[in-house]
Length: 128
Image 1 (cartoon, one colour):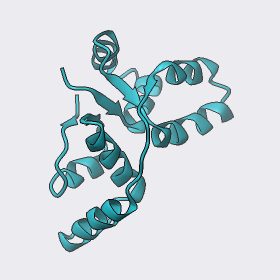
Image 2 (spheres, rainbow, N blue to C red; image 1 turned 45 degrees about the vertical axis):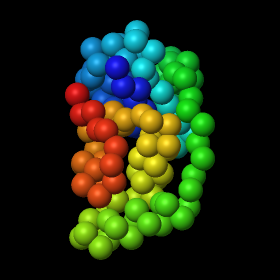
Image 3 (cartoon, rainbow, N blue to C red; image 1 turned 30 degrees about the horizontal axis):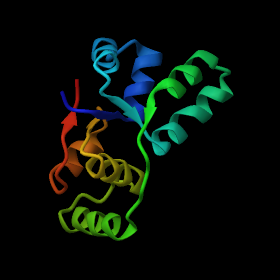
């Protein structure tokens, strides 16, 4: 089974809307779910503000993948996205995709930006 970095939108859906439960649990049981510093930085602050201790504790238990950002590659990916008319993909999403690919992982996300990014950058995307 493929390893995945779960994006912040998945975690928001999981904790707020009770979505993706079966997929998250299966990935955890099979030891295939990871986080990185970007996703944690996107999710932890709002949880701290709302004093969601269990959310923070849960996210902190997920294995972390090292984050090694290759700014030249990110610049190239951003250029390709603009060249192909995909202008609204942020650098953080590109960095998450780059990080997943560097570590031979896929991304578990429902964010439309990853679907667009997948058209120009080769990585596996899990949406369910």
